Amino acid sequence: MIKFLDLQKVNLLYQQEIEAQLLKTFRSGWYLFGEEVKLFEENLAAYIGVEHAIGVANGLDALRLILKAYIEMGIMEHGDEVIVPANTYIATILAITDNNLVPVLIEPDINTYNIDIAKIEAKLSERTKAIMIVHLYGQAVFSNDLKILAEKHNLKIIEDNAQAIGAEWNDIKTGNLGDAAGFSFYPGKNLGAIGDAGAITTNDDALAKTIRAVANYGSEQKYVNMYQGLNSRLDEIQAAVLNVKLKYLDTENQIRKEIALFFIENIKNSTIILPQLPIDNVHVWHLFVIRTSQRDKLKQYLDEKGIQTLIHYPIPPHQQQAYPELNHLSFPITEQIHREVLSLPISPVMTQEEIRLIVDTINAYTL
Ligand SMILES: *Cc1c(COP(=O)(O)O)cnc(C)c1O
Image 1 (cartoon, rainbow, N blue to C red):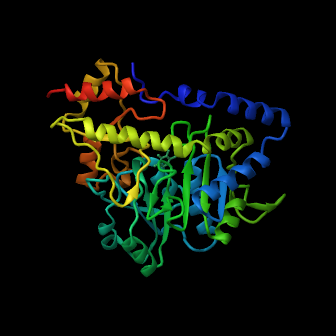
Image 2: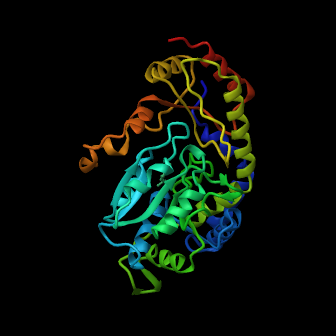
Image 3: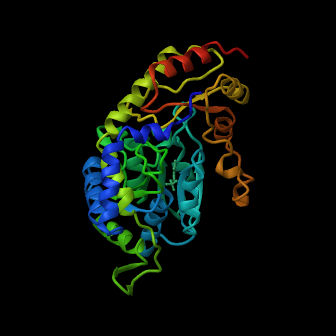
């Protein structure tokens, strides 16, 4: 059986190094706000090319905290609108509504599955304060038009970089394209911890300071609370693992890229639409997503052949029971994507035989 993602195998690549770090951290007796987190924040900031990286508990918190800090700074207020792609994981939307902000959904581009930047301006209002872009499946989405639009209307650009660490636009890393970015180190992401973990990056000193306080009970000084904050920390154990794995991220992303290229060059089946190779950005292939009108049939066929696939995602946010206020909306492109997408296994530990078998099995598939 070819697993969608063999996490055990991924992490055992670095078994000795990770186990040594875990033991060291355990024995240190220091588990929060320590050297490993500090080092990881420095390493991540250097890797992304930003002034500040702040470790937090998970990716959803990273996005929530950015918006919460902007509210505490008086840059946004409850009821303000945030532009966001209709085609995203629910966490992006949750971060907005959790702060009593209003998500304004925009259709994606059918070729990249990322937000269609040309459709944003028509949806702006006096209450629009930010554009939250999502580098979906590992592909950077950005343009000079987007930057100009944000400047013209005084909007913050916030990146949901949960799926795209290492991706680039114009030689700039995702996480350094906008005003602030949220990262997830959920175990299955391209840089995965061994539990929940996340981070925020920004070049904005005041924002970084506010986020640190908000994430620490709203406090800069112990027992003195400036904000009604949260408790959202990256712990030393996760940071120790991430410090090891960050060193290998580029190598792993390169392997993903080679597998994606092999799939694109060798999968030949007229019932299947392959992802396009990006022309103006670096894609890190967190997910390799194909499309077909017979998605459920293809998934079942691959299951029977021992190839595990997943759907990212089966139900769009605006059709979720959690959002009755969005249920009346219609986003035909988003809905089509949700009906047709299927994610093939792609990871740094797949063997040549497995990659070949996936190609041959898909090529042999007929409706
Ligand atoms: C994984 C993910 C998140 C949330 O990250 P968690 O660490 O699971 O909270 C947010 N946005 C996107 C696009 C994601 O893929």
